[in-house]
Image 1 (tube, one colour):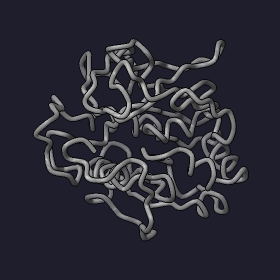
Image 2 (cartoon, one colour):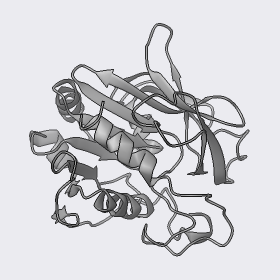
Image 3 (cartoon, helix red, strand yellow):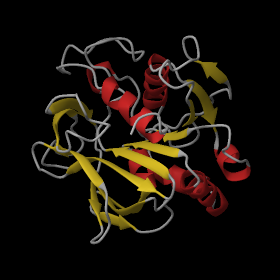
Image 4 (tube, helix red, strand yellow):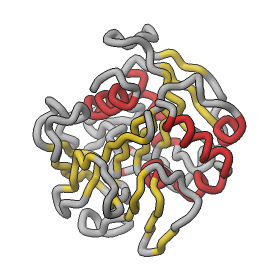
Length: 270
C-alpha cells in the first residue's frame, strides 16, 4: 500500500486467530486500560489490521480481534471501543447481520465508542457513494450523512499517496495541541457529508478540497470518530509493522491524533 504497503485494500483477511493481546503493561496510565475490539473478518485488509493493532499497542490498550459471528451473536460489553479498519465496506455490510448492526448501535448508544477508518467510516455512515454509485442500504447509520469516495481531486483513482488535512476545530479534545495540519496517507477514502440538520464536529478537512476528512460526534451516550485517510500508517517509521517508505513524506506521526480519538471515544478525555 504505497511504497511500503504490500497488500491491496481489496484483499480479505482469511485467517486471524481470535486472541486477547495486552499492550505493553496493559495500563493506560491516565485512566486505566482501554479495550479495543478490532474487527478482523471479511473486508478488513491485513495491511490495515496489523498497523492498527501496533498503533493501539503503542497506546497501551488491550486488543481483541472480532469476527462477524462475535458482533452478530454476542454482547459487546467486554470492550470499550469497536474499531473497523480500512479495506472494503461491502463485506462489512454483508457479513454483519441486521441483528449485528443493531448490536453495534446498541453498544454505542449505551456509551461505547466506535472508530472507523476509510472503509470503516463508510460502514458507519447512512449512505455510501463509491465511484459515483450510490449504496443507500446495509450500513450502520451511526453517521447521518454520506461517505463519498474516492476523491479524484486529491488523487485520481486508482492513484494514492500522502494528503494534507487541516484541523478545523483546534479546541476539540481530539485535535487539541496537535498544531494546524496533519499529513496522512490517502487511499481512496471518503469525504463525510452530513445531512442537513445533522450535527457533527468536522475536526479536519482535506486541504485540497475543503471537504470533511475527520468527523466526531455523539451517538446516544456513546462517541464516534471517523477518518477518510489512514492515520494508522507510519510512512516514515517501521513501528506500524512495515518498512519506512522512501517515496512518501509523512512529516510526522499521526498516532497522537488517534490516541486522542481513542481516549475521547472511551471517555477518558473530554
